[in-house]
View 1 (spheres, rainbow over the protein chains, first blue to last red):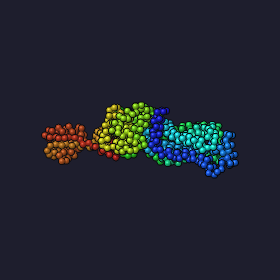
View 2 (view 1 turned 90 degrees about the vertical axis):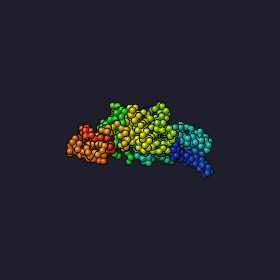
View 3 (view 1 turned 30 degrees about the vertical axis):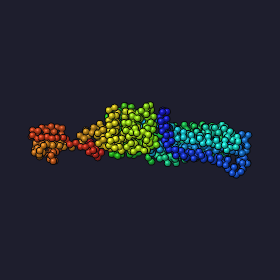
View 4 (view 1 turned 120 degrees about the vertical axis):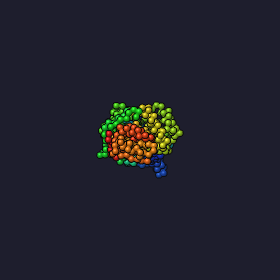
Length: 266
Length: 308
């Protein structure tokens, strides 16, 4: 495997994206949504209603699953719980990236008639797929981490005293630095795989929507309070996702058929 | 040297290429001719290792092109597809730099500068590919193909869409590459280009109908008509000619020329000339009528072959 070839194609991917920033708008919108929704529900709504979050006994009861620090007030405990729950929203950013960027990765090149000269170079399948994957992952993760920085800033500014500091815990860090990248790689890799098997970007996106399904289920279950993953479980899920990603990468390479991609148009 | 041995390719029930065998030697240009759908692009793609043959083999300097050898062998091939396939949002230089990286070229920028200069594209280096005309895009694609100094060039209609001046510069460049030892296979619909450029012409129509030097192909389709131009009245020499080629031979007078159909031009022409000289004819011109390459091509794709 040649790192130089991966770098060359990756540089092209990033340059291409830099010249077409509108492609990142859906990713940015999802990030903004992931930012606005938590603060709307945990800060704005209670302020408008004139009723603290801690006054809801039911809500207060389910916060126990998050093991909030004992020093936090009732309002802060609920806010801490909700901020932890909404952190999962940031998993949606790479999925959106997968849909808008990775889904175009291979089939987009084909439609632009740029795939044929590219495949005529010494680039190997794994180098091509790696460059395409990272070409979608780098901007997506950059936006995602920028969103997370704003999320932290928002908690510091608008959160109840002690909440922002309490959020710096093993579970949050695992979610942000371990599970989110692993889930991102899986969704992006899935989208690249789909992109190499279909004949137009629209079909790739339609199939790509399926990537959202498991994450949406997870998110809804979390919000309903029926699911709470401990740090240990998150670590195991993250590890599992990384294994899935590696398997998906190998599978993508195995089923990547240069000639089918070049010659099939239906 | 690149060789194709019994190459066949089927797509489902359709046969695109059927049992094609030929080779292109170093310092040789072979023009691949054939009607649309004759299998030219498929053949080029198989030779470039982009698609595998259903049967048969491709070898480069004796090394068979396979999945295992493909990566290494592709460094020696320059492939120009039918469509330029540039990345529209990238500038000309960025397009070329990416390919320089893919070929592992360490001296990318000086190479790119030289190549752009050769094609008079230096002032377009910072132009985005989307803003280039069709001809310019084709030129940039050619630069990209030649950037890594490949030993083998596979070009799918390289002068398509280019103006006559650029077409000529491409021909000159290919001639230079041939002199530098390149083996070059060019697919074209331009018969004049094929004749001017190629050492040999291969006519493909699913199978290889003929492959030979253009002059030889023309000779094989000779009409057997001899054109003789003399000073004065040509009708005065009809009997003289009749004595050599036989009274049954078709002799006609067309303006100032005599047109004689002969069975064996190589054998009979010297005797004919000698007889005319003896008859004190002032001979201006004697030549065998040979068909244009276009006629040969039309005959080949119409009949599917030439007799030896």
